[in-house]
Structure formats: structure tokens, C-alpha cells
Amino acid sequence: MPRQADEYAVHFLIEGGHREEVRFADIKEFQKWYSNVFIPKADEHGFINVPIKNIQGEFMVIRPVSVRAIRVEPIFLGSVERF
Image 1 (cartoon, one colour):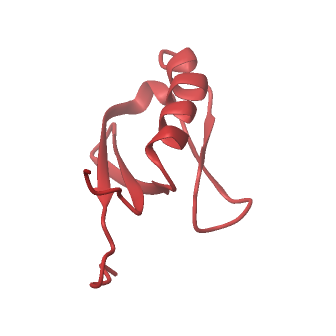
Image 2 (cartoon, one colour):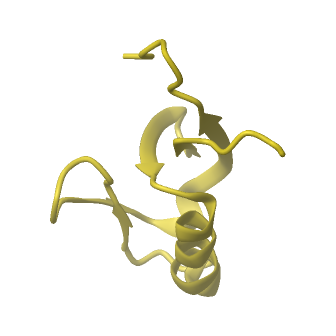
């Protein structure tokens, strides 16, 4: 059975070279946000909310059209903390 990631770090490469990271509890949560929120507005200049996992009720706000790349990284905490 393949290992299950503890969470997923999603890295955004934003126009101008800015980089931001948010975390999702599981890949399905990210896929749901990506397909229901990001993709429908991918060509728009208006802001969309990106949920921040560790801070209840706080969001990162981005313009989807300015996102140049998204990288999804599985995080395996195991016995060694990565902080």
C-alpha cells in the first residue's frame, strides 16, 4: 500500500517572481478548490481566495491570471518534523 501524505504544500509561482505556499490537508481538498474556484476564473483579473490551512478564517488573496505555475508537494511528517 502506498504511503499517505500527512498534508500537501501548494507552491504558487506568481508573476514578478513572487512565491507563496499554502497547505491543504489532503489532495482531494486541493483538487476541489482548484477545479471549483481557480480554474473557472483562471483568465480573470479579479481576486480569489486561497484557504490557509493552519490559520482558521484567514485567506491569501491572489489574481488567478497572475499565477504562472503551481507545484503540489506531498508532505510526509513521519518521525522527523520538517519545520
